Amino acid sequence: MIDCILLAGSPNDGPLAAVSDEAYEALIPIGDSPIIDYVLRALLDCREINHVLVVGPSDLNAVIPLGGRVELLPPAGGLMENLEQGLKALGDEQHVLVATSDIPLITGPIVERFLAQCGDRSAEVYYPVVTEDTVAARYTGAKRTYVRLREGRFTGGNMALLHSSAYERCRRLAALFAENRKKPLKLARIVGIGLLLRFVTGTLSLQAVESKVTALAGITGRALVCQDPEIAVDVDKPEDYELVLRELGKLH
Image 1 (cartoon, rainbow, N blue to C red):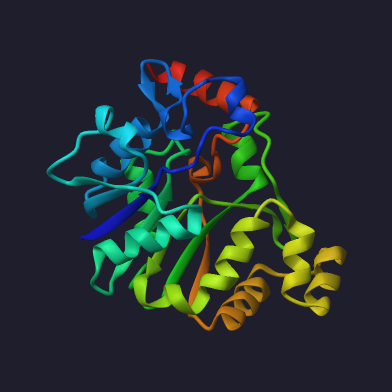
Image 2: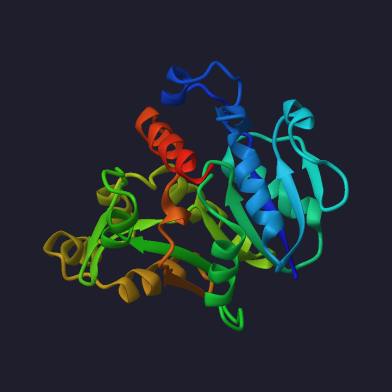
């Protein structure tokens, strides 16, 4: 069993303000429920997860089931600050599942499959990536940011398995990556000219990226190619919101 940190502190001051006037993105309604409700239910449905620590505003008190397996912690700032806040609250050094509150298409079994793919958890960080073909096969027209590698075109997921002891060693690099996660060329520049040239020519392998990033951060880590596109279908823009509305409408 592991604990989970659910990051839900993003203010609704970006493109999604066009679809809702809620103060925080986690509170934007999809049907009769706020977006965070779908994500939280999936996490609680995962048999591997013991405790979910939600890092978000007090506004969430009214919409999430506090007590038992769920606790609310006030945000400390941006994404990385909120993650650090959550890790400090959990205390013990352990592997922790980290997820964002904007992936409402995930389910308990999807989370379980990702955790199973992490195997014996001998590495400190596990990060899911999904191919463009996998996303397109399930969600026609979904617009994601892809990186072209030798094995194909990949987009990153919105969860990770992280050992808390690795956080400080990779905090600065992780913050830089988070800031530029939708800017593939800038990310390539950060990790070196040689890698950039292979990136531009499409000869850069996923394993080379994994090796370079873990070396820069001073951690052990693995990139996992996942077959569940829902991990990578986040709601950042109005068109993402419309896609999720359509997909969830098919299920209800």
